[in-house]
Amino acid sequence: MAFVVGVESPLSDEMRSLIGELNTVLLALSPPEHCHHMSVEEMAAPDTTVFVARDPESGAALGCGALRRHGGGIGEVKRMYTREAARGLGVGGEILGRVEALAREEGLRELVLETGDRHHAAWRVYERGGFSRCPPVLDYPDTPFSVFYRKALAEAGETLRA
Image 1 (cartoon, helix red, strand yellow):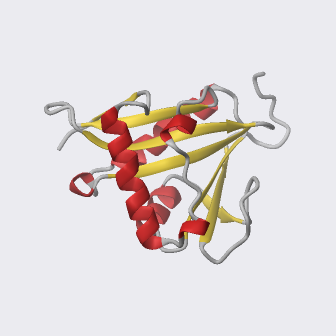
Image 2 (cartoon, rainbow, N blue to C red):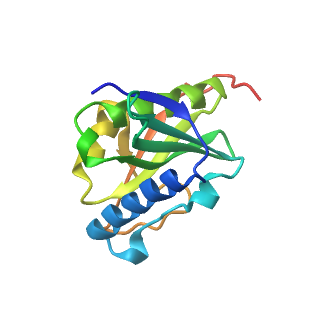
């Protein structure tokens, strides 16, 4: 199955449904108090860009992911999800690549993310994408339910665009 990836608003009914599926999956793997979900309204904020993979024939959403910008040149990978029928097709890796490309284009110096301690498939996507495990990032608590990753986009001392 082929797919195309583009930037979309998360506020459509279909995206609300997709994010609802993601939340259900995450809540099955992690205690609710250790899930760090962004709502679709938060995803629609100007500091976040949402990428959606779609089947070019049916137009159905297959997966999503987002870049959320923080101060200090840090970008955060958020809301990564691939529907079961599309797993193994490279959807997650392609979306992660788009997130990274946009972060680099905007001059961000690193990407970080938090994922769950039981999200082994996600770990593979991030590690294939060049991310390395690290201590807690941003303001996430250090709990046994979270795993953190980072990827430097700019070398130390490299000049970034404003």
